[in-house]
Length: 155
Image (cartoon, rainbow, N blue to C red; front, side, top):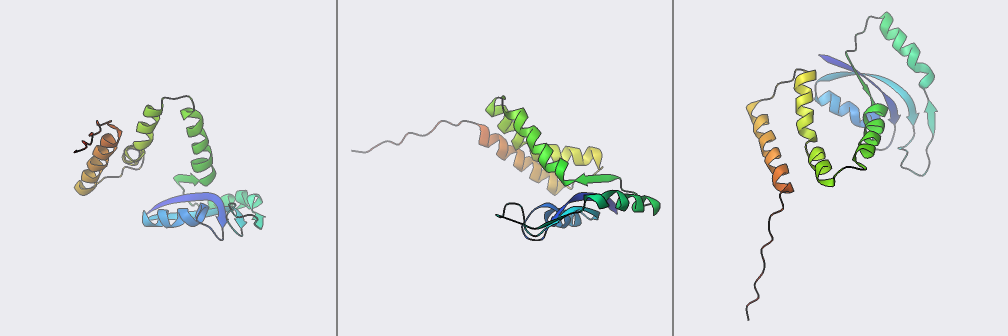
């Protein structure tokens, strides 16, 4: 079984952070080792929240895992994967051609499949390949500027 460490906050209410990551990783048959950075009463989108900072506990937990010879080949960090990733995306597309940016963002699923195959050695079934082809055709068709049909008015 694959194992990852997820280092991020836990929001007791709201669809974000660890409450979203755990079911996704579990559905992928991945064991998730959790290191919470904070516990929040609600997602930060709410007007106010109560929080408990747990960053002082990250190093002791990691050291304990090391003493138990726990191997974590993949490290999933919520802050880097979302916050830094989206910031870099915004900065990169700021001065770019909108058509190129749209095509690249539409190809996100293709990059995910390639990364899964290269980095995680995942293999897809023929049904999944067929779905990829359908998605690719849909992305390409959505970008093609077809001429509009003119309506003729009958008198």
